[in-house]
Length: 256
Image 1 (tube, rainbow, N blue to C red):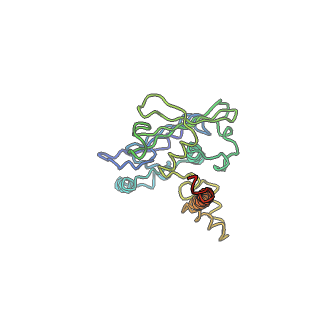
Image 2: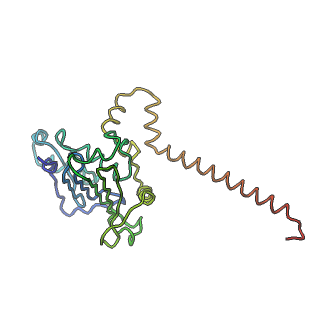
Image 3: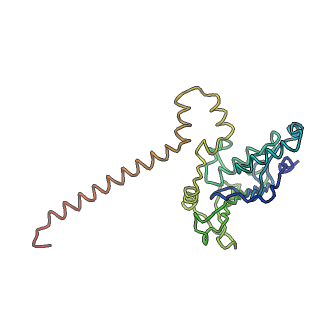
């Protein structure tokens, strides 16, 4: 049974959500972990997912309508499925397509190990909304990012052209720019917390370890890096200014 058959999706009539920049609109996985061809489109859809057991708990249509209303307002995609159906694989894919290392996913130390057994390569493709915060002519109203992983351990990124025709190579530098602009932080535990990390979080009683989650969750680590970099830039500017001042004062007035 494919992963898609575990879903039930409700289309909300006349529902036009605000497309926040960076909202995940579509995800497609090919030969990735347990997914041979996963493709879900969330452009205008609120997903309420449940397995056969929880289905019997929803005794009346009013409860389902209430849940749909809640998720419509929150604009949340809520996914559940049986064990082994591939829920965690989706989270791993999202981490990797945004440039995370394989070790960050806590599933492998090498991306090639995440290719489906017996296949030569795997692709992860996402579509994100863009309301103009990124150049429309360059990226389009929807940003299409693809990461291709080969069996030999190599991988590369590509991105759809703004005119909707073809695609081009995407550098890590440009990918980081897109992530920063859309405020996507795959290393932030408040944004992505995989199974192993969540277990560690729930089990630990060490105050220092718990503070580490707080520190990274508020993005203070990134702020500290920027602060240190700014201090280094200020120091370099002062040294350059001092050197130029010495040169200017050492030159005789008549030679100026």
